[in-house]
Length: 409
View 1 (tube, rainbow, N blue to C red):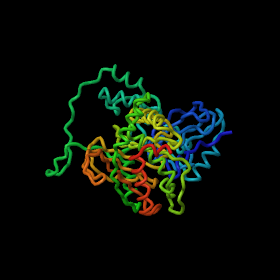
View 2 (view 1 turned 90 degrees about the vertical axis):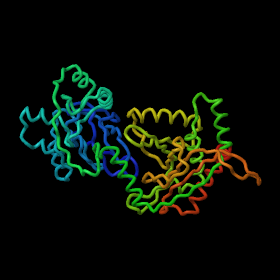
View 3 (view 1 turned 135 degrees about the vertical axis):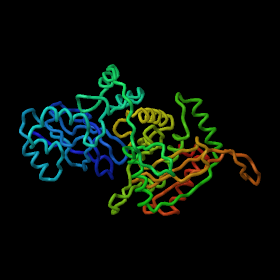
View 4 (view 1 turned 30 degrees about the horizontal axis):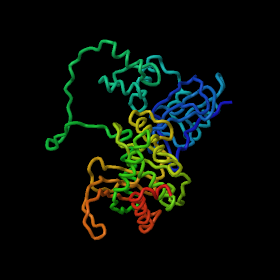
């Protein structure tokens, strides 16, 4: 019996997703749990698994379509099965798309069908991650590459490269700009960059947030990290150490590990402690997530984070890599930043900003000494926690970093 494959709800506050790529065609077999498509959510591009096994009888949501959670993506069933009733159900619910309309419209002429394959409904060329990387490395404009499937593949790139391309004189185009601005280039504001901007705007506009800074003496933390690295088979970074300290603090102050529902009616106390760590990539700022941090040691966290960073930078993330965080760390210490306030990543309650560790004169036992000091700044959602609670939380993180053995207690 034919059934609908729907857009899953990934995370508490996900409401919809935009289809960016289908990995299967109509007529292909899919198995339950097998990755069927990719969709851009409010946080990242996620691989979406099939929620049932069978043959893809109709793809409802085309590349570029925005689909609400639990709304149809495709129809899966047995070859030759009549799906008119399901199509009517979808059409009646308003969850229509070009695919549904095409199922009841006259068949397009062959030339028109071929033309429709060449571009997605958004005008963007669907392309596999490998083909996209190859095109970038070879300097190939993807809009010039012809493809016969649902997306540009490695084979299409190689075929384009081997085909002699005509030499053409670039036409003179008119660009209207103010003579006083001196615009050199125009970059489309779209994709992940636009998603990031939208989420950050949402955070700043909707969250009554505040920030608290604590200066931390990193002397013992530096020594402790060196001792760990002398024994470990992988280099442990300060990000993993701070993540472990944060997990300990989140256990002591669980409201910092909470999230406010999208409708503002409930506060969710999250069961797991999953810590996102901001990483700069060619796509912009991404946040791979270390899962179940409280149950892992810093060496295991270092292994996990190293793998996460590689997958994120090479655009080979697996489901869950970039979602599910309950708290986030942003580290600009390597850039020499003395102190900063990071923007909270919705729907989380807080984010910890790590600044540079700088040798600083401080007073210890009434004497001026030089110590490696780091400013840590907590930005927090004042709707979920009050200032005093947040102050205790960030101060506790500082205490743990100043005496790392307490992290293990």
